[in-house]
Length: 149
Image 1 (cartoon, one colour):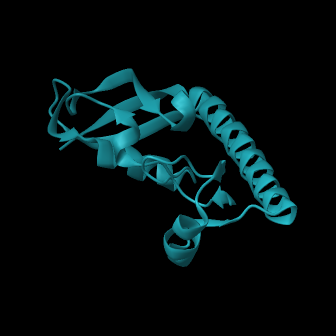
Image 2 (cartoon, helix red, strand yellow):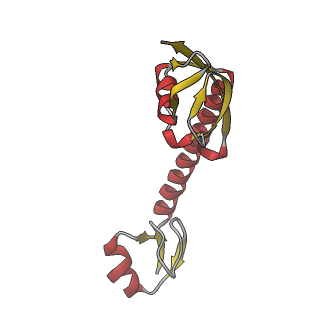
């Protein structure tokens, strides 16, 4: 009996593959578990349409991520924090503060996306890497301004 796998099945195949299996294995195990459906032309056509839809959605998402990377490259984020007269910050600027500053500008990214090995502790301008989906990276310009107290 030919079945269309709905999910990865160990020792049989990956989701979307059509496999020839014994009828008892299909009827007693794969079909009741929902791991496979009988491989009719209609089922294969639906599966192909679903795969095409997912591929188009992924391509659209990748395009959006690349547009976001371009936007981040052109953007300068200014963060004002209390500092000493010499330009040292009383506290460091962590990833969370950068995410908050981006959120204020309408850009939402995850904290883990920011490549910052240690907090920023001095006034000045610097670039920070941001790792987005699909291996896309961007450099964000951050301007740290001190406010003397």
